[in-house]
Length: 351
Image (cartoon, rainbow, N blue to C red; front, side, top):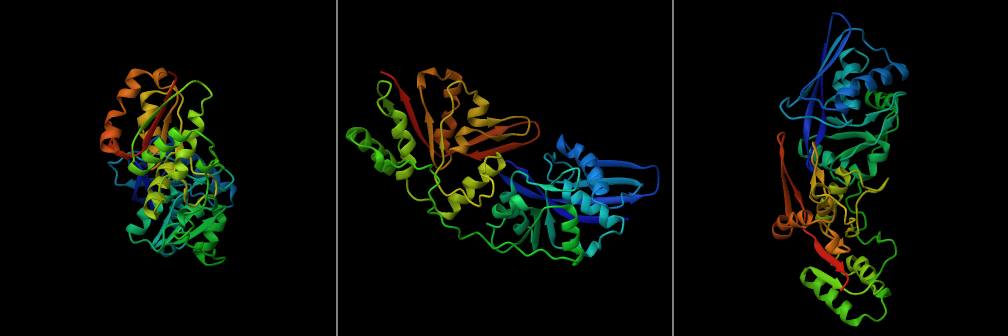
């Protein structure tokens, strides 16, 4: 029997819908995943098998083929565990196939059947809405982030049996309230405030001009003069973020796995201060599955380079494109990705 449902995957800081096809045929028991699965996706079959058995479901002893379409795009991450398990239950007759219509799901499974959060819930929720989905099923820890997307019913679950009871109608889950209008005035800067600074009139005037005109700054002074203290307070006098800016910044941090637990939106402009031993890939992003670097994590905020002369020259050279274009383009064999990187650069050094 064949079952079809939809999930989503992250590519860069955006996401795209993935059609999950599960086919059960007679033959020796076998579990194959096709569609360019990588790493955690291949290992997902072991998690799915254990989760279904330990959660009390019947695991079909048949030849199971899971196809992740489009099949020519590499798939990474553990978010396919939930849709694959639901596809197996639907194909084996333990869940009505019609219950999956119009629903997008993602989430990592524990071996006992619990649902664990994944990265990129916000961009995947945006992709689900753009694809015409009516509802979204996510792990409970991802609900606040996914519920930011208006016009989409978001359901959070803690276990796989809870998802099955919701889909079958036995015990429906209440949809999460939309968080699209969450207060963008929340102060998440850790208590730092530009108004705390006493004296330093010339330095404060320079930073005020930089904040007003989006200029970059170099602070030169002896140790203990207050360079780092001033730089950390610069984001508090930058213009307030719009909802679109907050969504874009939250997407970047969600994909990087840096979104605080239970947070819906990042409402304060970011401040990033990498150590001078950072590599060029750490600064601008990279990896086999490219992820955002520090310049992208500082998008919309401040990138602070303390002890500027201590940074390696080739690391500073890679800042050219982000500072000129406001974005980073990474070309790899599998994909060509672009990350936003429009930030205010503040550097500090001794005389």
